[in-house]
Amino acid sequence: MAPTDSPLTPERILEATEDVLRRYGPAKATVVDVARALGVSHGSVYRHFRTKAALREAVAGRWLAPESGELEAIADGEEPAGERLRLWLTTLFAAKRRRAGDDPELFATFLELARDASTAVTCHVERLVAQLERVVVSGVRGGEFAAPDPAAAARALWDATARFHDPVHAGEWQKPETEREFHEVLDLLLRGLRA
Amino acid sequence: MAPTDSPLTPERILEATEDVLRRYGPAKATVVDVARALGVSHGSVYRHFRTKAALREAVAGRWLAPESGELEAIADGEEPAGERLRLWLTTLFAAKRRRAGDDPELFATFLELARDASTAVTCHVERLVAQLERVVVSGVRGGEFAAPDPAAAARALWDATARFHDPVHAGEWQKPETEREFHEVLDLLLRGLRA
DNA sequence: GTGCTGACAGATTTCAATATCTGTCAGCAC
DNA sequence: GTGCTGACAGATATTGAAATCTGTCAGCAC
Image 1 (cartoon, helix red, strand yellow):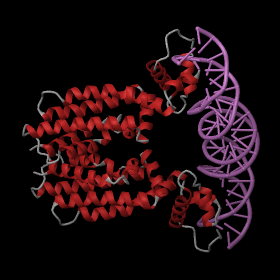
Image 2: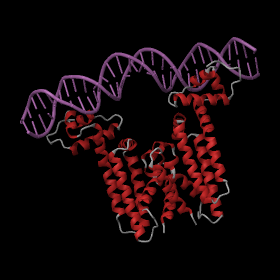
Image 3: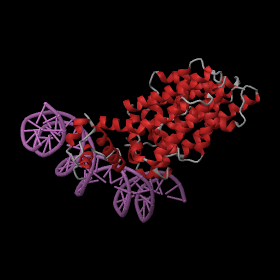
Image 4: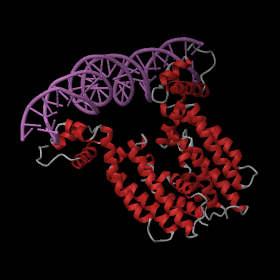
């Protein structure tokens, strides 16, 4: 790739890293590849990101942010808590499934990071469980849900739907019966929460 | 290993295969190793099992059988359905966790087979979900549970507890908070089932 | 000083030669 | 005939030498 006159920013490095990851996948992508794509030496990349791991974390963070944003809008919406919960989980599952299909290489990166309990992924999960907790709390306030410990209930909702959002299960998401199984689990969980 | 005078039976081959898998793990264990342990040529092993995959399947079947037996006794017991369901799932989780710790190499074999959707593992899961369904049906009969479609409810119970029985999650089972999280999920699911 | 380069040491990965394994089968021993 | 052996072809895994990568840093250009 030819050198550019624009300055080398973290932002530009992250974009190039995403491209490289998409093209080569997490196993083959190297820092040298990223530098080559930017037309700079790899030493310059290390000026902005201390390690290769930090770079991958940053890419994952950028990739995860829109997901958590979209869900936040639902979690803090105006519908009844039951509706919101159903919509939130359905949207989460749909987003995961879409991205696993559209961006398999980036998704593989994300799966590796999840395996190592990376900071970016852990924080993302904490944010999402906190959103769930807000929905549960508002449902309890409105008399729609009964939950002595909303934080525990939110965590239980997260754990009970693991098969539909944990990337290790991504291979099963394509199967036609999965959609039905997801809704069965959702119904059972909602019945368990109702006052 | 010195040759024996006793005849070469499938049973003896399976025992030797278990030993070899325990010692070398699924990645390194070979049919030649099994034959060596038995003091015969590897051609003799192929007389009893058509392929290496068939041999691994048979080992997995033998390994899985006691688990499904123990759970069957609980599923078809006399206690109230709620108690039975709680005990069944708790026993399943405890058994998985124990075996993942005691026999890591054999457990890794089992994980590989689960990944490939092997016949032995698929049948095992079907047996277990059928047991769950019997518990749900008896709960509905006794007026303890409400479930329009017991088969779907059984499947939902299985899917919602995936994090606590699916071998891909085995790494998380050691964490101290997992026991509590399991019971939170269990409580939520039982509340969802109650009439 | 600021931003980048390119050479470097040690760790990791690649590649091709070599060895081992899987699955088959003709044939030996009983 | 029955049960096993051991050699074989093709596929797979191992190995060690060579190439590449990661992360550092002295120094060049501006």
